[in-house]
Amino acid sequence: MTPRRAWAAYATCLAIAAAGLAALTHRTLEADRTEAAARQEAAVEENVRLALWRIDSALAAVVARETANVRATRVMPPVVETFVIDAAGRRRTLAATADRSPVPFDATALVARLPESAAGDLQAEGGDAPPLADLLADLPVQQRLNANEFKARQQAVMQNSLAQTVEQPVGLAAAPLAALSAVWADDALVLARRVTPGAAGDAVEGCVLDWPRLRSELLAAIADLLPEATLEPAEGSPTTADQRLLAAIPARLVPGPLSPPAATAAVWSPLRSALATAWSAMAVAAAAVGALLASVLALSERRAAFVSSVTHELRTPLTTFRLYSGLLEEGMVPAAEVPGYHATLRREADRLTHLVENVLAYARLERGRHAARLGPVAVGDLLQQATARPAERATQAGFEWRLQADDATCRLAVTTDPAAVEQVLFNLVDNACKYARGATPAVIELAAAPRSRSLAIAVRDHGPGVAAHEAARLFEPFRKSARDAAEGAAGVGLGLALSRRLARQMGGDLACEPPADGGGRFVLTLPLAADDVARP
Image 1 (tube, rainbow, N blue to C red):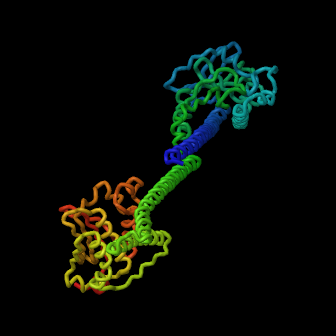
Image 2: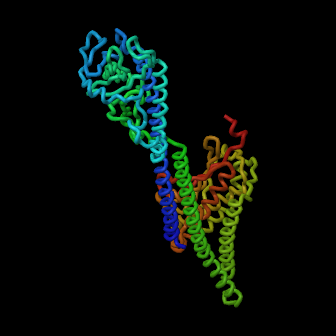
């Protein structure tokens, strides 16, 4: 498969996986938002339930107090006036606050609206209403819960009010007083009840509440639960369909606007954390697979380049071997030229040997089977051992060999492997012979000098040097393409990569340091022995 097709297949698989995860994420977030909204609504409903109980409890105390003291000579807030209405519909004030005039309302209409019993019920007045169980059965779950809650609050208000009933005053029938019922008379909120007519001839007695003041006090009591709530009158008889209806008075609680959906969506839930983890895992997996694919394709490209380079490198010496050996075998070479043929065959054999040695050494390094044999070696002895082959290679290629190392440097010691150093220097000199062919002057220089805590061995030629765009890839293995191998200098692009790995295995390094006046220069650094490092 070509790299283009491999990357297209990878991109297609990644797009499919991302689309699937995106669809799953969308559905999951929708479900999470729905659940969060449900939780928010449940929290609001719980606050409403608590607020209704708190309001009805406060109103129950007011109703119970006025049930017992409706004919008292003084009024207490939130009552602004107490009154009686006779059988003829005439209203008479018993007591009122000093700063308030009697609240106007239609007394006849009030008498008509009062229930015959002590208080209203969930059902409408009259005997034709269906039973409560039948009404509740047809309602949604939340309305059914609200209706049951209203019934419970209504019973609590009734019990609190009836506990305060007393015997009627002298002049009326000796029957227990009924609890006060809350009704709207025009714009006035009134607590009133029917009384059994006696000597006084009164039909209704009750009191008028200061609704604005009462509403403000009740809303202040639930400000911690519903800060933007309000109370509005509820006209007519209560039914099971009423939502958030007060049990003590005909009013409805309006909780106010809910929190914006963005506040709910901003909550970082465990589900969102799981989705973020899933996306992160997918991104890491995609990056890992992409990096693996890139490395596999690069390895494939390097292998192809290596095969092409090795084929090119083997073709020339093998051709030479076949031609020269055939000529020698058939006796077609004059006796005077036979030594030259032998020298050519030996040179091509050395070339093949060097190629095979580099490939085998790199393979051992890749498998971790090459162990450097490190030990202290005097610099003078090291240069004598490690420069013999490089010097011979330079001389055979027609270059002048120059070795520069002063006596002080030669007396130093380094911790290294002489055989590995020889292979590194030979690779550097071999590259100089290949790429600096025809340079002026035809000189290859090797200079050794101490540098900080190490010894620097520089190999320099006067050829074209290293191009800037090639510097980054200079030490990559098999960096030659098939075209470079066919058109460029001999080699498979392995010598510098092998040399740097050998240098680092010995505790040193290999770097390209082009000189200012042109040419190529590679510097091998080796660590000085402990005694020479400690020496001032």
